[in-house]
Length: 428
Ligand SMILES: Cc1ncc(COP(=O)(O)O)c(C=O)c1O
Image (cartoon, rainbow, N blue to C red; front, side, top):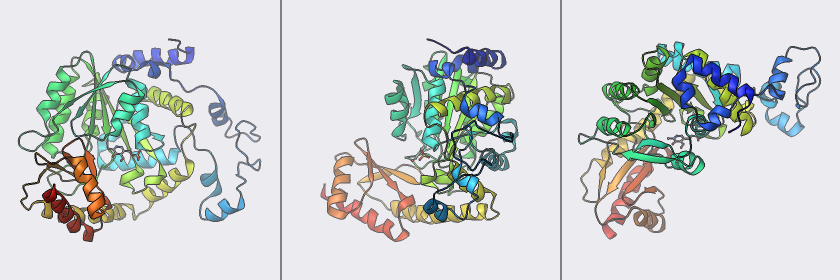
């Protein structure tokens, strides 16, 4: 494998600062470095009186020359924010606003470096995987997981995966399953955890969350453990007993304080669900290791952005900054959460009525709930019958599971959906 001298310089520095992190890099992660190319040189020249660096069409004074229809549509925005390139690592204002939001949630974020901007959360996960996950390695996930992880880790990176049952016998998170599965791994383990979960809609209790963190910290005593925290549904929690904290906070504390030098927590989150800004495509990747090591990982992430999407979208970063900095933001987020909470309560109530046709996995958060159909019913057949006989769309997962996305249902549609499901199950 050819490694550019600049990448080697980063790797050598990282090995001195955080040997376990350097060792955990995938071959692509080792090769990655942000080159001293056009964006770098343009950044250095940003303050110059005459700037002939970047291929960005301006009036010569740093202002864009927008076309009239676009300009009219975006008249409410400062032209530079709306039309010009974002820095590769993301706009400073966006990164600071997101970091400040997390800092407000947990003071331990003060020890964690600013995030890099990605083009949505999936892209953040994909970059985290590119950085650490090598072909042939194994991702540990619970058996109920977002199907796109297969595309990121298996299809794209030629990895494998090992699952453990999501729930324990008491209907809580299966801590022992997680512990035992990590214990089967050699010197490097990859663990992905997504709370609140898609598809199960489960968020751990605060006690469970602490215990999960301790299992991961403990497992990292004798091996490197990369933990991908997929926090896509962060904050969308509807029960007092479910934590609204991210697992990342405990892990980052252990890693940045030196208590767990072999632990590499990576937080992937963004505006998609939390700001109800699905098409905005603003995500964040945060490295929960000491800031000097995180700076090198940030440089490598910039290289992956350059090699893939070029640079992140500036306009939607600007919009998300405006939302986060608006004094109404927290109340607005709570309004969104309350809309979902009302749907959650209605669905929970309807699903608590006894039926021979399905059992409901414990759920308390997020956007979904998951049903397990009784023996004899096939999830795909039920889904097809729902579309054709009842004009109802839901998702089948495996042979036995159905995922209901209550986030996209009007309150009034919840009862008809459950009734339609009951009718179809009775006929089949
Ligand atoms: C668990 C989970 N992670 C990540 C994502 C991806 O988010 P984005 O649309 O920002 O790429 C989703 C989207 O559905 C998701 O459910």
